[in-house]
Amino acid sequence: MEKSLILIKPNAVQRGLIGEIIARFERKALHVTGLKMIQLDDALLNEHYAHLRERSFFTILKESMMVAPVVAMCVEGLDAVETVRMMVGATNSRKALPGTIRGDFSMSGEQNVIHASDSVENALIEVKRFFNEGELFEYQSAVTSFEYGGEEKARM
Ligand code: UDP
Ligand code: MG
Image 1 (cartoon, rainbow, N blue to C red):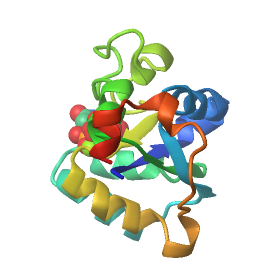
Image 2: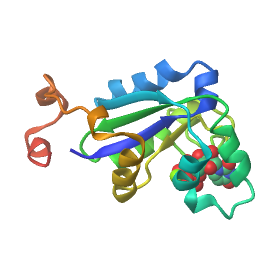
Image 3: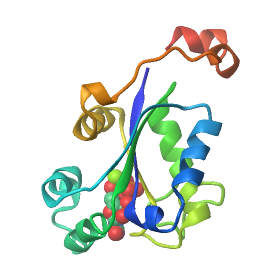
Image 4: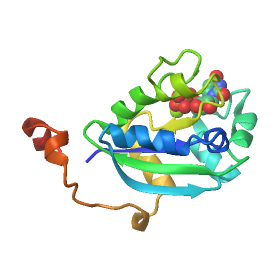
């Protein structure tokens, strides 16, 4: 099943939004298969945000990601990566549509409450970056038949 890596950022942890954000993914019927709180460090952020290292805000961004712990989460579902990105909304929260997590919970392009993998390829790398094998769980969902149709289940 397709996996996506989510980080509930320090600004969301500070603002008491952990529960509301996790609840959105559960209500969507994405399955939580990994969940933990961790303190990020400079080395991990250099890797995670390598695509932004030339940007003016790189150091400020990394600092903002270390001021408090993050909640790392792995969710699974059919087309999970694309679905999660749609739920998260545009990078600049002021441009993110109402109904999306950033659109509903943030006014900032930087302090935008959540990270989510942007492609299936990156999701594979990011899930491995934040979770050891023993921290991810495979379990039979009791309600999959009520969450997906027959043709969809054949793709899972
Ligand atoms: N970011 C920022 N200013 C920008 C672009 C990005 O502060 O102009 C921050 C923001 O916190 C964003 C993170 O850098 O979530 C990673 O940027 P990316 O382009 O990967 O956006 P995302 O995938 O998070 O939507
Ligand atoms: Mg990104």
